[in-house]
Amino acid sequence: MNIQQLRYVQEVAKRSLNVSEAAAALFTSQPGVSKQIRLLEEELGVDIFVRRGKRLTDVTVPGREIIAIAERTLRDLANLKQIGDEFSNETAGSLSIATTHTQARYALPQAVKAFMARYPKVRLELHQGSPTQICEWVISGQSDIAIATEALDKYPEELVMMPCHQWNRSVIAPPKHPILKEKILTLEAIARYPLVTYDFAFAGRSKINQAFAARDLKPNVVLTAIDADIIKTYVALGLGIGLMASMAYNPAADKGLRALDASHLFESSTTRIGIRKDAWLRGYAYVFIELFAPHLTKPVVEASLRGDGEDPGL
Image 1 (tube, rainbow, N blue to C red):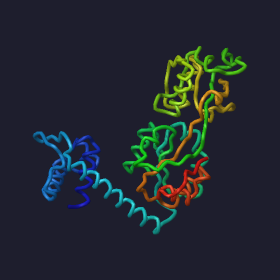
Image 2: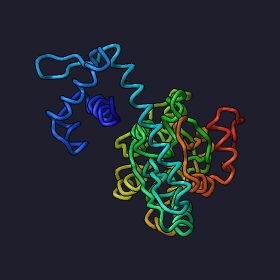
Image 3: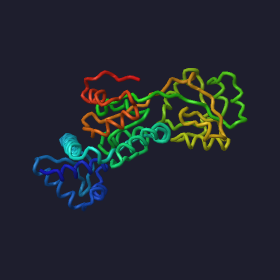
Image 4: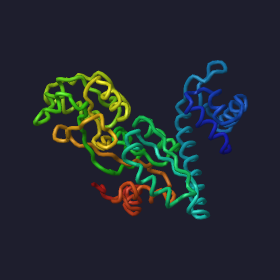
């Protein structure tokens, strides 16, 4: 048994049992991957995968346990390397942040700028995706930290979740749109017009749905998008009014649009940081977290990772 065999098993499972894709991702040959998996199965005395001819069609019951152990082992090895890197060079390395477009574009820039000034030798990577993708990237070890509003609470067994900040929404519209004449913005007024807002998986969309449903209203959603910039673009084209995160509206930059505060209509949303429970973070990762959310100091984060800290709250 060797580490290479565990990596092959993990990658094949991750690639939906496609050995060719796994081999390409690992920069090796398909026969080599198949041979090493067979050797591991022979050594363990059980099949990891179900085969139909030369194709892998499923994972066996013991195979599921073996894959889980392989993933834990590879994560522990990665943590060992992180520890070595930490003490051999505390100011160089890489940090991967998985987040949504709205967070990357509007919430993170100041923290990123401050971090890069402090750690110029650290390669900072921002990976943007849906909330579910973000969680999966962190769980698999592809990213170190998840920052999102939705989906993090769906992985309580894998991720430690800590609140960063709360935010709410604004309605945006072209300057002469009739909704801007509303003395008090209501859900009924919003429901009268075509609406451009976030896709169902993004940026607190569930809070929007809940608010309208509670009033027995159905918004006329004509277009959904994954980020606020797209919402603003189509509102400016006259497709409808927009409903998006207030932090994404800048009067100086968005001169062709006007905004109405809608925070009294919707429950506020909480953006959270998610970290894999068995992760070992480099020292500069704690610095980045605190730059983004000052109340999340290193002792607070470490206590959360150990499972013996209180909810840091906001």
